[in-house]
Length: 355
Image (cartoon, rainbow, N blue to C red; front, top):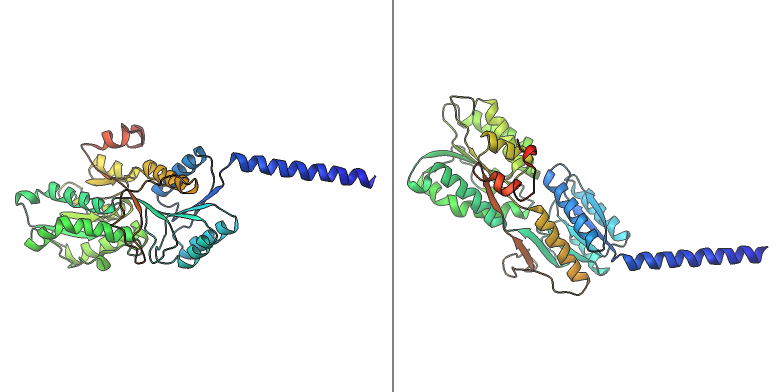
């Protein structure tokens, strides 16, 4: 009897081994994806697109959202290492906090791609996939110049800046792009910042949080714009723009006698596109996350399969420890006259979602 039990157990173990080997043969391994939060629609879209593309390429995925909590993201990454992932695609909450976990990952031979946000102060990752964030800032600045006819000598106009989070390298890069366009008009007095707040550290919005932007806008309007009209706001992304617009609406802007200032944005999120359609927000910058997710997925596949990895910038992105090989994608300005062409005709949104 015991002989038959041993034989049966042997057959079961053998079958399990065969099953595992077949599973290994049909999968290239697991890719861990670490994203900042589910609070912003764009991160959900990025995650869904990466999962879809990596599955198409033959990988399994394990996706984690950290809800803008740095310890949570680091813990999630450590758990992904324990699970034995072959690659990591990381959009860091704070790009300066990852040295230890990245060192552990590289010791295990894991390929790492910094996604959208640059990992800083570490050599222990391989590539960076992002949009041209300097160009994002240029587009935002140009949108204000065009809307106010600054290039035709109009002005002066009252203006305020709402930047992103200083722990996100993108905020620094976008700010540089913005100032490359708007600084001449600030220097000439055609744009006037009544608050005097112009340095990035003064105008930053922690975690790109719209509610904090709304609170700051409330304070600025109360302190500096009692009788003066605010003509333009550089809001660095759509979450910030929505907070700014809510504050402006709360004190009567856009309600007949007081026209809504020119308000920019970034990410082409549905509430902001709707705001552009109805006239509350002037512009946003569209970054096709489908394209970025595909680019990062193909870069990961190339690196793991020993194929050429597509990069188009090997000089610009210095993270404090190395120049990071980077794949840059182009952003597109969205305004009232082209939102349908850019967002609907390309299939990113259906028109009924934007009305």
